[in-house]
Image: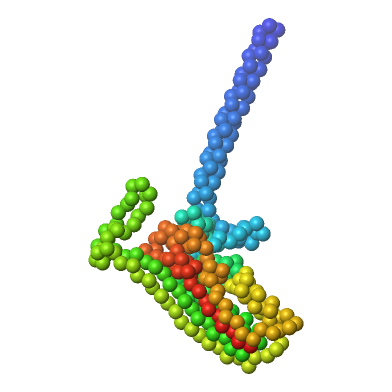
Length: 309
């Protein structure tokens, strides 16, 4: 083989080698690209599942940046058992009627550090105590418990201020419109729904529902009053003035009658009550708690507080 043939053979061999290297690199590139695409798809699907299920993990729950929603539902952890993105979670976060809800697994109740009143029960819903964000009260008890606490707080005020006796009279009223034949119509101009304007008693009736009661407590009484611990009435001007007068050096007040408006010690705002009602219905509870109705009745109520020193 002469030199020209030898050089030609070497060039051809080099060409084949380079072509083989390029082909190998191209194949590696395709393989890496396919792998990257596959990983990207897996990551995207994982993120979609995370967004869908929105699990809450212990580390996130214990973070200073985490804020407990105002509503909690106790659920069985079996509801999401076997879902990869939910493994190790303590529950999940969801939204119902624009209300953020924490769905807490029942096995995490004790570790949550939350006080449930009454005791936590699976499938029950609890709403935050407006004065203590670590205290949640069951929806069917929140207004009743708040009412009992208010009465106890007024007796505590009387006892702390050295009273001989106190009497608390409860007055609640609500005005309701009922229609015997459900004859309602819509005014096209105002877009408001009203009962048929008819004096026929069979068409519509107005009912005023009143609920009242009175409790009395007696004490030994003393002239060394102490500052009471206030929760429901901490912002009530009448109570604050009573405490100031009794704690003053003169201490001359002998008796007082206060009319305490329900709005000043409301269990929850009426707007929040309406949203909670919607959230509970969205979760499939056919029996409505009627927060809005109870909140309106509470706002129209009065507590007549008579105290004697």
